[in-house]
Every structure is written in C-alpha cells, then in structure tokens.
Amino acid sequence: MNRDWLKVGIIWAVLTALGEVAVVTWRMFPEGYTREYEVVDEAYILLMVLAVPVFMFMITMLTYSVIKFGSREQPTEDGPPMHGSNRVIVAWLVITSALTVGILINPGFVGLSDIRGEESSDMVIEVEGQRWSWKVTYDNGIVTTDELIVPVHTRIRFDITATDVLHSFWVPAFGTKIDAVPGRTTELYITTERTGTGEEDLNLRVQCAELCGLGHARMAMPVSVVGEAEFDAWVDEWLAAESAAAEEG
Ligand SMILES: [Cu+2]
Figure 1: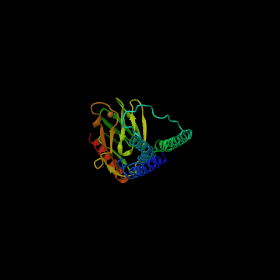
Figure 2 (figure 1 turned 90 degrees about the vertical axis):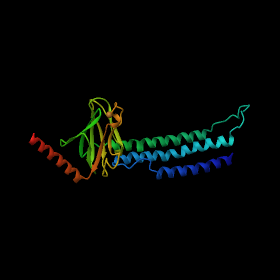
Figure 3 (figure 1 turned 180 degrees about the vertical axis):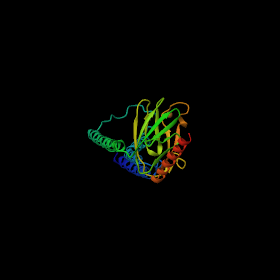
Figure 4 (figure 1 turned 180 degrees about the horizontal axis):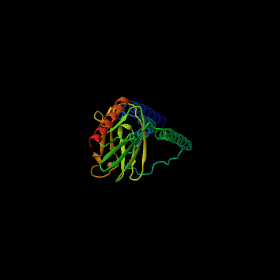
C-alpha cells in the first residue's frame, strides 16, 4: 500500500509541476490595454495555479486506481468495507475552507474594489446601446457612432444605458463588461495603459455581449486607445469641423 502512495505521489508531483509550468508560461488570453484587465488576468492565473494540484490529484488517483486495482471480471462478491479517516476529513476541511476564504478576500473583494471601487475619474463617456449600434457621447459634446476613441493613461468612467432592450457593453481588450439596461445607468471604470487601434487588434472593439436580436453579432464598433496629444488633436479637429458645419448651415 505504501508503495502505491509513493508512486501516486511521484506521478502527482510530476503532473502538477508540468501543469503549473503550463499555466504560468502559456498565455491563454490576448494582451490587455487596461489596468483592470491585469487585475482580472492575475486573479484567473491564481485560480488556475490553485486548481492544478487538485485536478492532477484526482486524475492521478482515478487512473492509478483503475489500472492497479480495477477488476477485469465481473465481481462475484462485495469488496472489503472501507472506513473514513477523521484526520483526513478535518485536514481537508481546514485546508479547503482556508483557501476559499483567502480567495474570497483576495482577489475576490480586494480585486473587485480595485476595479470598481474608486469613484474618481479623469473623463466621463456616455454610451447608449440600441438595436444594433452604439452611440458615444463625450463630456465635451462630441458624439460618435462609428468609433470609440480614448486617451491613454486615463481613468475613464463609462455611463452606460440602452434605449430598447438589454445590451451589454464589452470591450474584450479592456477586460470588463457591464449590462446596458433601458431606463437605468450602469457604470464601468477603466484605466487605459497602452495604445492600440481596432484595426490592428480585433479585441479592441465595443461588442454587444447580450443577445439582443438579429443584428446582435454585428453590434460592434472599433476602439482606439491613442496618445494624449493625438486625442486632443482629434477633439480639436472634430469641434472645428462641427463649428464649420454650423456656420455653413
Ligand atoms: Cu445588443
């Protein structure tokens, strides 16, 4: 029996080491553009790191038991009775409870308040979803429906609503999403950290993430995170074009 435990222990240790290396080195998800994305990403990796030993233990025990102790023929009588071990049960409960509480606190509560707790923001952008497009209104009056442009290194609050049915405001490269609800305003905070455009990176787009009808999949618009000077130039250009149009009209 002890030799079996030794073998199981060795196989488990090897599989766990391989699994942990895979989790830490293999990037499952694309690079993000916000600090919030990193918070979510780190929480995910932590959960994976904790899950690998448990998963490998179950797989090793199952496979080893089936191969070593499995009966080839139909059994003719019951196996010997088995007794639980109180020590194992207590240890199991204590360890898993401690881990659960730990995860609940950090990254749970700490991560959540990190993402949405801060009330401050450098910029407020209103977003309105309707079947099947997005309307973006900046605090300086600019309105766009074909793109969302934001400056880098800026904490932005999105005030999100919908005019008809439930939609969901999701920019994959930002790492967070929130429902767009008719008659209600939901808030989403992001802190942009690097620049990029929707043309280079498909994940930089506002994508509706709540099935809202025929055009749902196409309810998307590109997002650009640009340098602050470039953003200011875009704002000036937009406002100049608008006042020129107003003079003409
Ligand atoms: Cu939608």
